[in-house]
Length: 119
Image (cartoon, rainbow, N blue to C red; front, side):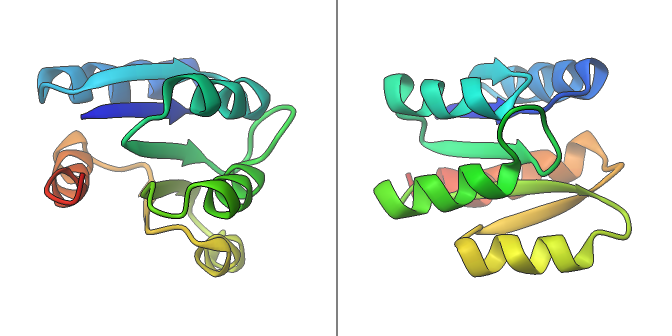
């Protein structure tokens, strides 16, 4: 599965990338929302994992834009503790799942695996 990961924390981005590659996925990474939107257009990922708070375009903008154009692409939103209202907004825009940071790489693998069968 081809997965795009948009996360502006370098260490978190690397952890996610390494885990997904270990699980056998092709991973495209970016550290800001603007580049994420460009990569989505050019690479057409099977799954998108995005942080909410990022430079240039937020994760909410990514969810809204993708769901308007490619409704079937699943999106997992990453959020920090205490952002419940933002997570609800992400779901209203069409997000398919969310993970609260910090999270275990095993949890990420399990959640991604759910979407593997849908791709």
